[in-house]
Amino acid sequence: TRLRAFYNPFIGFLPNLGLAALLLVGGRQVIDGKITIGDFVAFYGYVSMLTGPMRMLGIALGMAQRAVASGARVFEILDREPRLVAPPDAPALPAGGGRVEFRGVSFSYEENDGRQVLSDVDLTVEAGKTIALVGPTGSGKTTLVALVPRLYDVSAGAVLVDGADVRGLDLDSLRGEIAIVSDDSLLFSTSVRENIAYARPEATDEEVEQAARRADIHDFIVTLEEGYGTRVGERGLSLSGGQRQRVAIARALIANPRILVLDDSTSSVDATTEAQITRALREVMRGRTTFVIAHRLSTVSLADEIVVLEDGRVAAQGTHDELLEVSGLYREIVEKGLPDQVFLTRKDEEAEVAGL
Image (cartoon, helix red, strand yellow):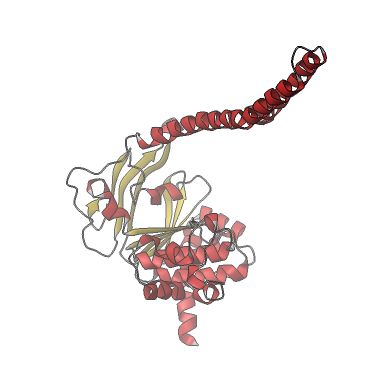
């Protein structure tokens, strides 16, 4: 800050200014015979000895002021009451395969002047199925899936997971069954092993390695200087974007969730890396209810069904071919997103593999 930029040089300059004044005044008094040269040298030595401690005292006071201000902000967060809490003695998420149902869901952000982001959404995702959410920016794709782990409460309607309203469930139990892989996955400044096992700290080395193999990242990890013990740096700075994504996918695999959310996980990588990530995603999606938030349509091929959102409403729903016939908005999105690409659905790709 400007204050610190001024304060530190000033603290260093002030003692030197005092010594200069001492030389000027003391030197004059020695010349005038008012004090001896010995007295002057002794006094100058004492003042010099005090300069360092006085400077450190000033620095310590400045640090203390900053610490008090920072502490006040930290305690403001710690003292804040949780916005969303589970009811007393809330039950755990019941057993099931991850069926998700949105019943007449409407939602608006408090800071958005009450404007509805979602309006009367009815949508059912059967257990083990993959749904791709597509639509223009601001259509409500990310908001819709954020309601499943109850990051927000609906304004109207209900969100059910395996038949239970999420508002009545224990939050740890609910969120423990949901994994999110975003386009900017967060890694911590610790080892690769600890980043993968973050969702299950008790996981064995064998389980961590198995998850890494399934995420197509094991072969890279073993080339690192310390293998799985290699520290990845703050936010995974020592890894490329694709490598960070695959470590995050391995973390999702080891958590073994019922429900998986892929928030445009291939948006910021090249074609080769995208192919590697897509292979890993198919592995983590197997047998899990999956929401794919597709900002680029290459990820839509992962889905069993596509839901088109527009202005917070379900505008159309169906397979790729069905939507090309009935949804003008979907046709427009495809034309803009895939001008020269051949669109292969998940079933098309499985059929190709079976025919090899």
